[in-house]
Length: 431
Image (tube, rainbow, N blue to C red; front, top):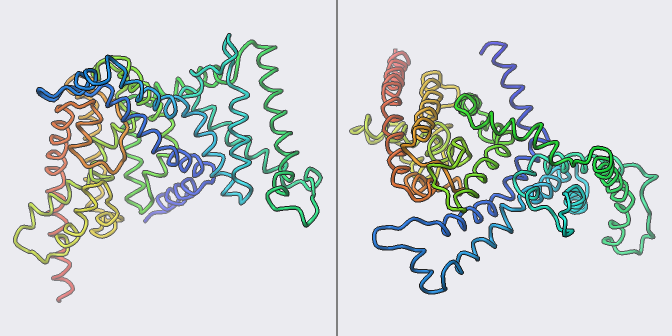
């Protein structure tokens, strides 16, 4: 391995372990159940008819026109509609955990700071537009900055109120963080007041216009999607968790994009007409089938090519890996075949996801397949995921099947080359 590649691996490893990126990743993982539930609520509210079975008509007949949909709307309001606020809490919690300081006060402080910065409506309510995904980047920034300030103030002994030893620990900890929390809230409140008085604006509008909107526009492009697929799989090839490393950077963007699709879909817009193609479920459902590298296709290629040798090592690995791969868990095949540091498998492992990214993007861009309008657990099996993320369209399933066939065709010649190389190595060892 040359020096430049070794340096790349070291840098990627440091990025993957960087505490702030790790906190962002873990913060989004923590809210993912709420995101999925909110997404499914909207999907059920707009579920398409299946032959004679029409869910909406059936529920309308029972509960009255549109009444049953209020439940899904309420779930949306408590999940996607406040996603920015939720991640400000969870990211701060995990960052504080990495510093081994009080996690709950730090998370509450971040949430309180976020609320301070949210614009107030004419009737003195919070502007809901900024509590959701439009406020994601502010939520991330607030979580990181307030937690860092809290930590700095907390380690200053002059800012700590000391209580007698017989005072309960809970009370002691509350007073310990009192002055640091007060100072952080004062700084946040002062910044909000200055922006409002001097510039007649707020931090949400500034960040959304200057940072979030341009990044989302760039993220929803074919070159960006190819770059994400390429970098993710190059990192995996060297034994690094590429999905986690790139996910810490891309998830705030791609979750925002699918939220916009989902919101418009819930308002009655067709899944073909929603604006964003590249989203998190786009990658999960159509590119990462069976896990990174679409390795479920590699397992299928192994069973096709090695039909007679029941005890062949590749076939044994494939048999052990297949159950997990059905749910997009593929570490056994990545490290067991192996794909990691296997130069023969590098090309298909990178080529397959890049190819599927291009095919899937063009299929949606040309209007052949609906765009993604639902968030699902990443462990949702292929075929089912293709149907659900496209709003209940058989075309999503057809695209997944087409992608799998293409991936199998790409993997087969390289698998044959790997088998040939293994046989030659056996002959050398016998001599």
